[in-house]
Image (cartoon, rainbow, N blue to C red; front, side, top):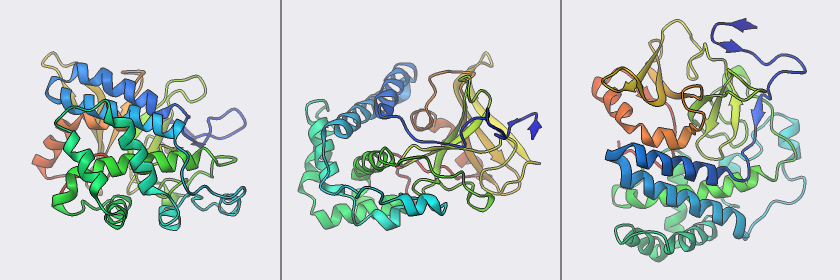
Amino acid sequence: MNHAYGNAPMGIMDPPPVVLPEQDHFAQRAQRLHDLSERIEPLRDFLAFMAQLSQAQQRTLEQHTPAWQPEPGAFDLALEHGMPPLGTQALRRNVDVHGELMALLDGLDLHVGEAQRPLLDALRDLPGEEINRLAQDILEARPGPEERRGLMPLVAAALQVAWLRLASTLPQPPRRPTAETRSICPCCGSLPVASVIQIDSQRSGVRYLQCGLCATQWYLERSKCSVCDHSGKLDYLSLEHETGEHLLPTQAETCGDCHSYLKIMPREFDAQAEPLADDLASLALDLLLAEERQYRRSGFNPLLIVGE
């Protein structure tokens, strides 16, 4: 179906319905965060630290061998039946969260400043069962205990490494979600952080939701709300300079039917836009929408822990 909002992939030359993350995904994100830290002055230190964290994630992905690894063919049955092969509830007890986290902290050790070092020390001293509880809160998109909230983005970063590593073991991408599960990652069952409109030759003009956990992308028509599937009351809000130019490529796609919003990054505005990185850089947009109290955020960014 062709329409003004993009094309549905139908036919042999159409774009892939599901795309697994690339092996240098965290390195690409780190570069984007570094670039954004130099552009967004109020968030410079925060984004610079997140860039360091992403670099540490890449090192952990490349250099650490986890204690548990799936057997060959472990996910074939799920793929065959259209189920998320890396479902978080099914794998959370198998994944070596503690090992991934300690490797990540080792990768950060030489690069963080004194302001962040207490966080690393606190996590090293935390009992394994407490780390597992924080991991469960993150996987279920809960804010967790207030006194531990500052530690949760680092635990979330370790979870992202673990699930992206698992995604790289899949023999093929899973199927595109059905209409009933359009907003659920077909790979791990998590929520999307945002969506991106691609500009490469194979996917030009096509929107993909990107998972906040494993970074898998899956196709969704641009004319539909990712939450309720309606299209009649969609609107797009963005941060702009006084001149009217876009401050960032990020827009909030708001839905007047279900009163939710999900950020969208058209790469025609910035070819290097990356959903999770640009979501962090556009926190001012979330604050503006929160003040209006008209729309609730549907995107899930594990590195952004928001209290209730």
